[in-house]
Image 1 (cartoon, rainbow, N blue to C red):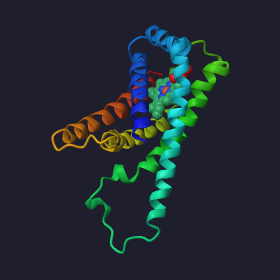
Image 2: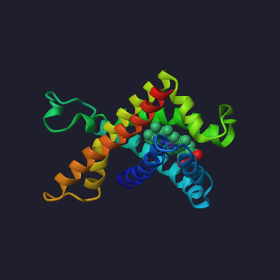
Image 3: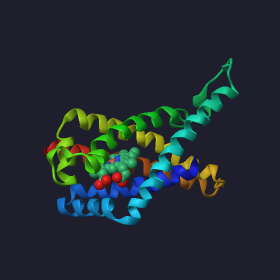
Image 4: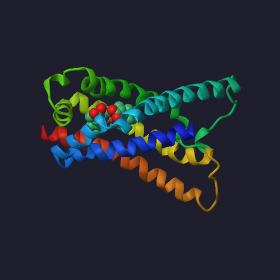
Length: 200
Ligand code: HEM
């Protein structure tokens, strides 16, 4: 789970950087997007990316079911907030919310750009701007980005821990980086949606 998670984090960081270009320059974003959609190396990576998502989601579901099976009876006394954060206890729920978002997102962008008529638009930028022109769409996206941020808050630090990087000297720094990263992702993606909605 940790390896696929870190791989998806790398993708997400690149995806955020490219999408932030929509706030800077239309042509620059379209060029970057075109490069990502046509470069042979990136195209090959798309299969690895799909596999990464499938493995991460599948393993997450299996792990949650195994945990439930390991303790079929509830504790007589249980105060989870005493030893774990809400973000760590809600990983399966925030993960499933991100999955619902992903299905919607792939339908509107990936499928549209690859197989559709792009709703009549002839470049990625115009499609992004048109979709965020709808308030319902922007609200759904921003809610998904908040869920993604909560998911990453635990996921980022937990990935390092699972790989054995658990040290009294480095763990506090990893936890701080994790907190910063989840805010950058949630605020960065939300800013794209909100700025385009406000400008529409
Ligand atoms: C403001 C937010 C976002 C915008 C504007 C955006 C835009 C896009 C666009 C234009 C594409 C099509 C790229 C192409 O094939 O030419 C795409 C694909 C994709 N997006 Fe996003 N995206 C956003 C957020 C996210 C998030 C948060 C995730 C993951 C949790 C994500 C996952 C994906 C995936 C898996 C693909 C398909 C792979 C690919 O084509 O490279 N996106 N997105």
